[in-house]
Amino acid sequence: MSAGAAVNSSDADRPIGVFDSGVGGLSVLNALRAELPHERFVYFADTAHAPYGERGDAFVAKRTTAIARHLIDAHGIKALVVACNTATAAAIHQVRAAYPTLPVIGVEPALKPAVALSKTGHIAVIATRVTLESRKFEALHGSLAAQAHFHIVPCDGLAGAIERAESDRIAALCEKYLGAAGAFGDQPGQIDTLVLGCTHYPFITGELRRWTGHAVRFIDTGAPVAQQTRRLLLNDGQLQAGGTGGVLMLSSAEPGALDAAAARWLDGSVDRAIGARVADTTAA
Image 1: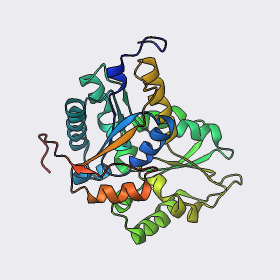
Image 2 (image 1 turned 90 degrees about the vertical axis):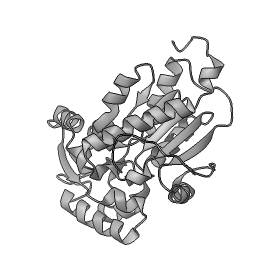
Image 3 (image 1 turned 180 degrees about the vertical axis):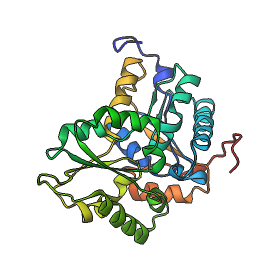
Image 4 (image 1 turned 135 degrees about the vertical axis):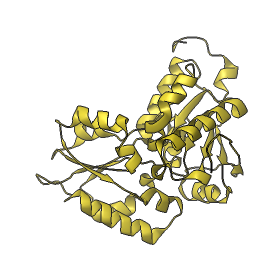
């Protein structure tokens, strides 16, 4: 449907699915709720299998397709936001192929905006190893490699530490990985832009700032993803024009951890999280 077409109210009333391996996607959900305050959301945290950045591609692809199927069949979602860099890299093409009429929005490290904003031409990219070793990232990096010097750092264990709110380990890993990236600052040869290539990382910007200083610009994908979701829904005539919005929280593990994360990091009130088992052929 075009943007000017009549809206089927039953389609517009359906929720938007948001999916991550754990709590990191709450950073994207915050941006979505700010951009689309009238929409209803179903957020699925696959906490029983988090973090995906320490899993193989085949495992991530099976979980991603199974959860997409669950959100479509059980909740009738009108769009799916894969709010996980690792799942986007490993499986978004499979979800799009399986559900060609469903708007599916993924996330990827924001290298293009970083190139446009950097003054020194030195950009650090922190993400999970799976994301950085994916073909999708390699193609993106290759297309921009001549335009800036990228300091690429795989951050093993950092998403998991954030997932478990392990403050001492987060601090130690930030020191280790940002130290490996190089010198930060706004002088020639210094890194003046940091790409947060995992949806968990916006929740630790205070800790990251300890090592970069305040002259460095941080870039994540939340706002661009929210804007793209709005454009697709508008084009399909499925944008919700009224209503109060809301969020249903689902977790594949005991939901207390997701409740705590939502209380700590999610803007605005939400319903309590509930458990939701999603079976596939992958062994837990």
